Image (tube, rainbow, N blue to C red; front, side):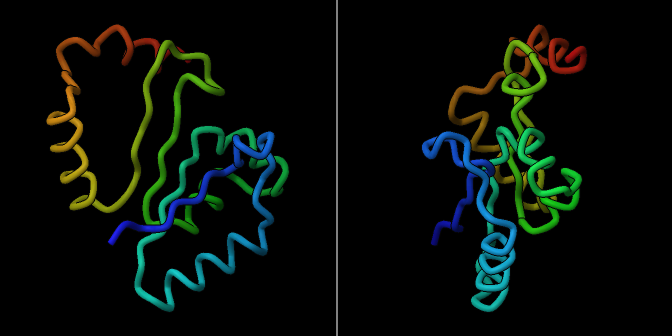
Length: 115
C-alpha cells in the first residue's frame, strides 16, 4: 500500500497550508493504523512561519519528507528525501532505475550547496 502524502503547503489550493490541527490528526491516524505518512515539503520552509514552527518540528510529524532546493532556495534544481535509512536505500535504487545519474548531477549539486 502507498503511504498517504500531504503537501505542505498545498500548491493546488494557492499554497494554502494545511491546518496544524489537521496535520496532527493525520499523524494520529497514520500511527493508529501503522501507515507511514509522507510529506511533499517542496515549499515546507515557506510554510513554517504560518505554523510558527521550525522545519524540524513540521518534518517530525512525518515518516518521510521531500524538500526542494530550487523552489525556495534558488538552486538550479535538486531535492532531498529524508526518512529512515532502509527507506532511503530503496528510494535511491528507484532514483537510479528512473534515470538519476550522479555523474551528470554535479553542477546541480553545487547550485544546491550555494543556494
